[in-house]
Image (tube, rainbow, N blue to C red; front, side, top):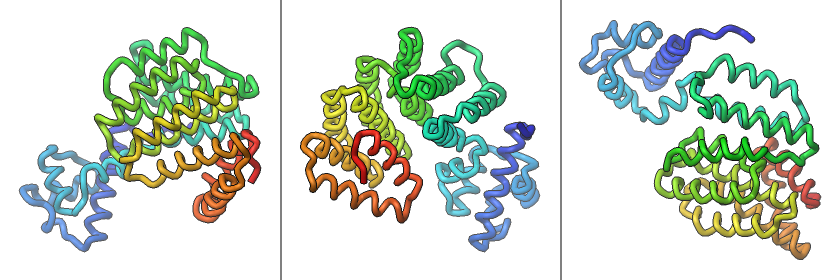
Length: 297
C-alpha cells in the first residue's frame, strides 16, 4: 500500500484546500473573511501550514457561509472510511472476493488505533470475519457465542449510538443469533429516537434491510415482519426519502412473498425501473437480494 502522510498533515492540507476553494468560489478575499486573524494566518491555513483556535476557525467558517458539519464531512481525509468499509464488504460479498477483504484488513490494522480488547478496531475486524464466514459458508454463517458476546458487549457499553456503531451493526447484525440481534435493535431504536441526525437514516435503513433479508433466508419470517412493523411505526419522522423507500420496498416484498400479489410485484418493479435510471448500483443490489428471495423482476 502507498504510504500516507501523517493524519494531522493530511487534515491541515485538506482543510486548507477546502477553505480556499470555498472562499474563491464565493468571490471572497482573505480580508473579507479573516475577522480578528491576520492575513498571513489565513494564508498559511489555506496552504495547510498552520492551525488556528477553534473560536477563530468557527468564525472563519461563518464568513465563508459554511457550517461546521458540512466542513468536517467534506474535509476529513479519514471521514469516508466507514463508507468505504461498507462498500468494500458489500462488493466482496457480491463477488466472493476474499482478496479484497484481506487488503481491507491490512488497512485497518496498519492505519487505525486499537489498544484495549474489544475496541473499535477489534469490532471492524469482526465485521470482516462475518463477511468472510458468509462467503466461505455459502451464506450460512453465524457468529460464535463468544463473538456474539463481544459484539453485544460493545454495543451496550453506552446508551448512545453514533455513526461507527450504526455502521458496525449494519455489517454484523445479520450474522448474530436472532435473540441477540433483536435485543440490540431495541438499543438502536432507543438511541435513534434520542440522538438523531439525518446521516443516521441510511445506516438504519441498511440495518433493517440486512436483518430482514437474513431472517427471511433463514425462514424466520415472523421476526422479519415484526422488525418491519416496528420500522414503520418508529421511523416515520425521518426526513430522508431513502429510508422511506427502503421500508416500502421491503413491505411490498413481504406482501408478494405472502400471496404473490400482482400489485405488490408491480410496485416493486416500478421502484426498480426508476432506480435503474438514476441509481444503477442500488438497483443492481436490489435485484440481487430480490432474486435470492425468489422475486425476479
